[in-house]
Every structure is written in C-alpha cells, then in structure tokens.
Length: 250
Image (tube, rainbow, N blue to C red; front, top):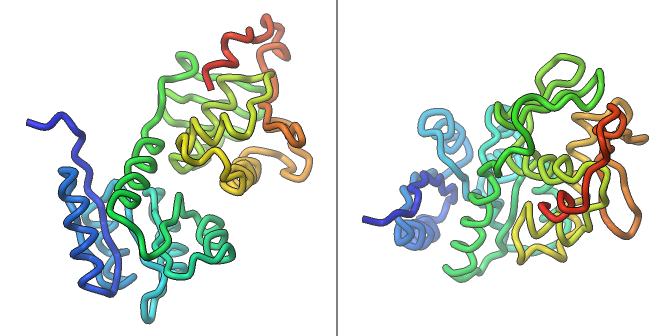
C-alpha cells in the first residue's frame, strides 16, 4: 500500500478533454479528482466536497476563472492553481492578487502540473511550530501556530495556508533578515527562488491583515534589496536576542 497522502483535488475547466488529461495524471499520484465544468458548479462542489486543492482554468464562459476565484475566496481558503493559456504577466499577477497560490501556463506537461500541485500541497501543510503556546508580539498582536490562530486587537484574523507559512518563517527568525530567495525556497519551494513577485504580494497580504498602518509597517520590515525581517519581539519583551542558529531554520 502506498504511504503517499491521499488528497482530493477539484479540477475546473469547460473542456472535457482537458479535464480527462488532468484527471489521468493526478490519479496516477493516488489522488481523488472531482470535476466541474463551470465556475458555479465549482463553487458548489467546494462547499460540498471540501477539496484540498483546486485547479482552475481562467478562460471559461459566463463565470470566468478570475470571477470564480474572487467568489471562492469569500467562502474558502483552499489552495488554488490557475490555468492560463495566455502566459502574460498581467494575468498571472491578477490571479495572484485575487488569491491564487500558483499558476500553470497552457500547454503544460504532466510532470510540470504534478510538480506544481505537490509544491502547493506541501506548503499548505503547517511546519513544526515556532514554540509551544501563544506568542505575544505586543499588546496588539498574538500568534498561536499550534492552533493556527492569529489575533489582532483580540479579534481572530483569517490567514491562507501560504500566508501562515510565510509568517511562520519570518517569526521563527524574528530579529534577523531572511533573504528573498530563502523565503521563496522555504515557503513556495526551491524552484521558486527567483519569483520575487510572489513574495512581494504575500508580504503585502500579511501587512494588510496584521499592521496598524500597512504603509508604515511595524512587524514585517523590509530590508531593501536583501529580504524581510520580523520585529524582534523577544528583545522588546526583555528576553535575550535570537541566536544566529535560529536564523538558519527559515
């Protein structure tokens, strides 16, 4: 018996031949595939079948992939890979800004698709916790990675899986600068080390959710041309500063 985890993946495309092609290759990995031929059906199946990941085509009649993604993000934080035939940067950025986790440009090889799906599923899983119990950054922000909970001014804030992973790696190195390529490799995967636009977008997402003033961040600080640094809350609280050994964990 295979020891590979079994995932349920929703494939959304108005071309039956494309769905068959994707289904065949995903089922070879031992994953369950659920189909939808349009955006509205996809939204219903997300509620009913609770997939672990959605593969979503951009070019669909009536409700296109972008509008489907926008509505999807109102009800679910499930990871989404967009399929686009254009390959233009504007389309890719638009999908990422609407909440997609990755994109694949048609035509694509089975190996590329499976690799992207595995990478997104891998980063949707939380890493080991930074430390046990809640982390009180200051009187305004509390983090609890054990419970997947973020509190801002006492109110829970919902983060998508990729946002959690990025926050985890920043917080685990609080006080130290984590280079762009290191964050991309740890959060997205080694093959994403040069995709800095992913990192900029997700840092912006986190700032919008966590910072009092995202334009003047106090938690996630930019080290221009190098990387990002989470404020050293341990030193602020009077604890000894982080060691350089911790900086190697991200």
